Length: 230
Image (cartoon, rainbow, N blue to C red; front, side):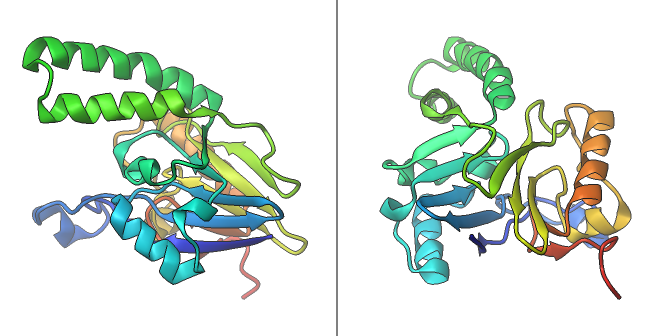
C-alpha cells in the first residue's frame, strides 16, 4: 500500500491565524490524498476545481483521472467534491450516515431556491449539481481493501468519516475536517461551526489516540505529536 498527498488543502479563513481573519477569504478546499493498494486507486476529497486537480494528479503521481478506480468523500460539501465530475469512470463513495443525513436537507434547499429564484440561477445550478453528485454516490463499505478501512469521525458533519490505513509499522488516519490543520492539532481545537461540537471533540480525541500519522482536512501530513519518539 502507498499513500501520497496530491493537493494540500486550505481554509477560506484560518481562525487560528490572527491576521487571516481580517483578509478576504480564499477558495477553501480539502486536502486531496491518493491511496494505492493492489487494484484500488482511491482518491480522497477532490476539492480543487477539476482542471487544477487533474494537473496536480499528473504532477504528483503521474496518473490521469481515468486511472482512479474510486473517489471517497470524508464529508459532502463543496470543499471536498469540486472535481468529482472529473472522475466519471470511478466509483464515488461516502459514508452511509453522511449520504443519508445530507440528502434530504439538500433537496429541500434546492426546492426553496427554485421557488425563490426560479430555474437557471447560479445557486440553483450549483445545488442541482450537488444533488446529482450525491445521487450518484454510494455508501462506502466498511473495508475498501485489506489495509484500508472506514473510520467514523462524526461531529463536524453528521457523517464525517475518515480512512484508517494499516501499515505494518504505523497507522495513518485521513481525518477530513475532524482534524483540520496543524494549529488545530497542536491546540486541541476543532473547527468552528460543527454540527455537534461535543461529538466533534470526541472524534478529534479518538483520532489523536489512534493515529501515528494524521492527514488532516486542510493541511499537509502530520506526525501525531503524542506519538513522537523525541
